[in-house]
Image 1: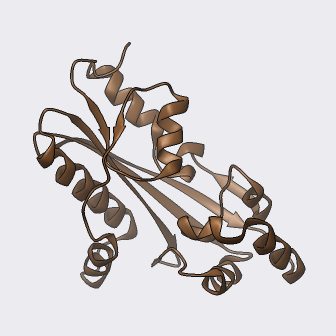
Image 2 (image 1 turned 90 degrees about the vertical axis):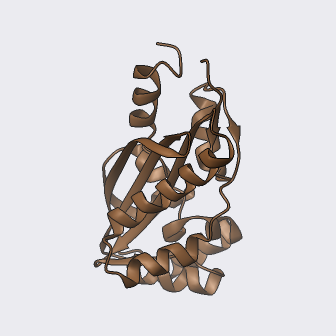
Image 3 (image 1 turned 45 degrees about the vertical axis):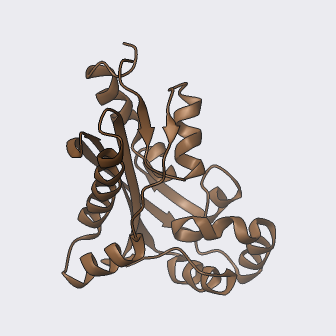
Length: 199
């Protein structure tokens, strides 16, 4: 790889995905106000899928502007439930309410990735997964929250599918990596085709 590769994120899940794929990169979190961006886009009637894409784009271009010689990956994930975007919960009380709202119903995860060079986007992709939570009991919910505690506050939907959170679901349709927060297969495909990682 001739140009350095940067992940414009502080997400441990995205870091782990790239590390597991044995891709050499560094992390440089983007300096954007995600909540303000998301609120502004929502108020304009932007679709949840396009919100994910716009946030990934903003992250990639912001860091690419600071490191123009690098290949920068920006990524974001949005949870859509009934046409509405759900944000990460602030505390376990909000997490409980969100899980009760999702219980027994479907929702969608839109995971976007944008790759930028010299401050402009050169590639983009949005993966979408459909998930259905089972109609779990209140006692299971109590046990779940006691086990996972505050670790779920960093995730949309209050779950980590790679762990105990998988027991919340009756159905998952879509790419596993999209559920984790980045359409990794598509990202790796572009990086390989463009010669940024070894073929």
